[in-house]
Length: 481
Image 1 (cartoon, rainbow, N blue to C red):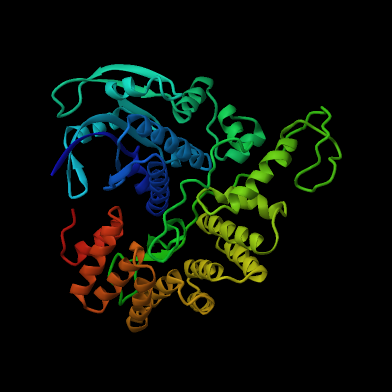
Image 2: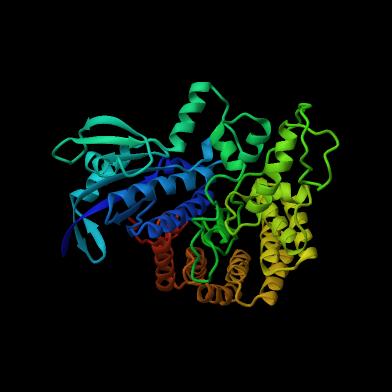
């Protein structure tokens, strides 16, 4: 064991249990993306993540200044991602930071420093940061951030009270601003900007002056695919030959569908700028919301839709498709992402139409896989199998297509075909919890309890928050903790 002094950052999701209860698959996808944002910020500031149990993140830094800079950066990154969601579905982290004595054991850190950081995190508001006085004194003159004094606080299982400060972040400031103004919550940064109902923080983001949203990309699994595009699962009744309570494989949207573009009367102030959407001089120059949309929102929508991170792309991709902001492979990519949001909204036929347009423009394994999922939702089994097969034909290493077809064969009771595809999926995407979960269910159906337990335990190791995997293990008589 090695004892040392370190700056410790502790974070977890505010209201995570509620988010999981309302939509488990969406919560898990977004948690994976937020953790990727943490990983990028921690690495860029010279820190190290040493634990990620449940929805928490624990990291150490050699410098309190770097710990605070990391916390501010990651809160801003997550705040901009949240702008694409209504307030009730936003995922906000609380962060606590202290400097303390810790013991390193097998890469993990233990001791009072970790415990105090965890208690401070509980005092932070959603989207906020709470720090001990030792951190405040170390960074107050070195970082451009405002601090609020909370005074001495008694922390559970900590002998002496700790003097606590909170750091003013855009997330906590904008929340206070909206409450003070009595403003209605906004559903999308694009729509909010166009209607003029939000303050300077959202305008700053929409004009392209905010942080780069491509920072903090989701980490890839063993098959090189971002978790945000992995197979999602929802509970459905199993077939007669399948175990009870089995989950359904599919890919869900990472963001809600866009709200309609508001129609507002523009002002008559002259403007020499051409329309970005058409490239032609504006027929009636304005300085109203329509001009802002054309000059700033549409270019940013194209950038966000075609970025590698699809979490906040649904609204953006709808604008890209409707306004003809992309062509060729880029338009196909936008159609696929729009299809995911339509499927999540329960508009299966429209989702299939979007995927079909993408395939007509540029056929890819991803587009066929996603259309297969939409056919699966509609119980169009033959069409789904045909799409998965075409995806595999185009890309023999597309683990998601193998996994989805394995799950469909499992649902149909053809366990021999199912296990072949499941074996291939595990081989191609060994870091994906869903692949191990699928094979675990199939092995259980085939009477291979030992193999099923092994696969399900591996799935739970990769994704400790998976309630479906826990339930499957419990049905096999295994305890989960």
